[in-house]
Length: 319
Length: 249
Image 1: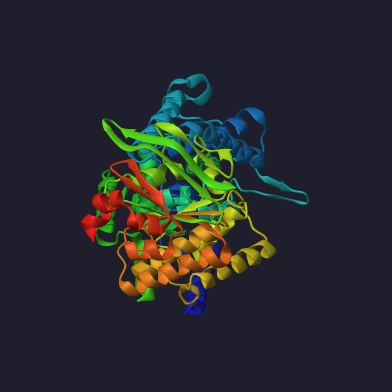
Image 2 (image 1 turned 60 degrees about the vertical axis):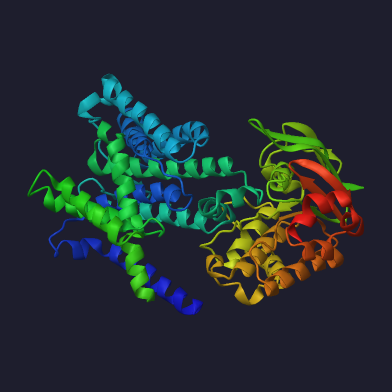
């Protein structure tokens, strides 16, 4: 029985990767465009980072956009002022989001439940207002402009990820695959299992000798590094960093993607992000109130399939 | 040598004196039972021993070391493991996964984001061993939340054992069990004590279990120490009869 389950999991995993690898070829005939796929990957990675905490540690951060936005500004500022290097910009964004997450996380993890969520929002908003007000550095309300992602120099050849949308898609897919692999690896490790232990039963975890706050802090920090990485990629996608990327409504979007896709599953948030991005793309060309359609879908999913779209699909497959 | 010692321990919740100046000494290898009517302060006393909250007054010693201010997870690292009156498990994980988490913590891997194949095999061997001891081997791949109550209690004990403790604190291990399940758990506890030499302190309501297992008994009533002694001494004590045994029997 567990053998059949393993096979099913492998088939599903293979299907996901084939779909992602061939995305530029099937999206265009279906009326999409490659850049849409790139956005799904980046926002999906961000939603997966939120879910690393929400779905696997059981703590809800409503301010994770802050680390996403910090990643974006880190990457943008690095390209603009440090050096015209794409890898360096990714490293800068990841480090900025991750390190600030680690510092604030040390304070945030002292609270739990609603208070945890409130404190995460509060800290998130601090960075939103900093980005908004500090115009000389961040461009203020207009966002940070004046940088573009740079071609990759790989010894013998250069890869033009700026004007070749497919090349950029595959670059982002590679980054996404690396981050997802690290995330998956952590979740299958002893540390990952203590995260799940905390989600399942905090008291039991504590009396098994797990210092719960410290472990939540480590998970929070890891999640912020992933978030910073996603944010840095997002800056490269847009060649632009927006203060609204730090705002708590953006955090809410990530939580929504995670919950909609299925927060108990590893890939659920990616699916949630895909649904979100596609609805946004198509319906926003019809009406500016596209968000109400996302909202209605969200309510429907939560009421009808509390385990998210992927959780529902999976249950059907088992039954 | 003493495994566990509580010296003049008290706990006050507002105006309620939940535990009042209770002392207890459990030598290594002893099976000690704490009994008393509902509200006697047994679980409060347990919570202080295991570090759930600190005592208002008094000190707690474990293996000759003052642990009064030591956090709960550090006490586990020192070799103290507990179960709860209402089963505390990871319901959505399998029996094997539940026990593996505690085996990995005991192995010192809890902060490790990786594990080697050799280490993993060693952990699996230990988990299998504990599952065999607790009679859960055949149910290793079942979700704990779906098991019968008796098996859930056994799984909780298995998790405690996988921590490789030298002191086991069991809070009403037979609570809510039928006769057959009670018998099985009692056999397990007796075997852990006799064959494996565990020091065990347990809270228990079922007097058959207490008199069957315990070497010494502590009786609490309304937060205070009423009596302490061997099962025959306790059974013969008039104070205990009046306060407790008389009422329930």
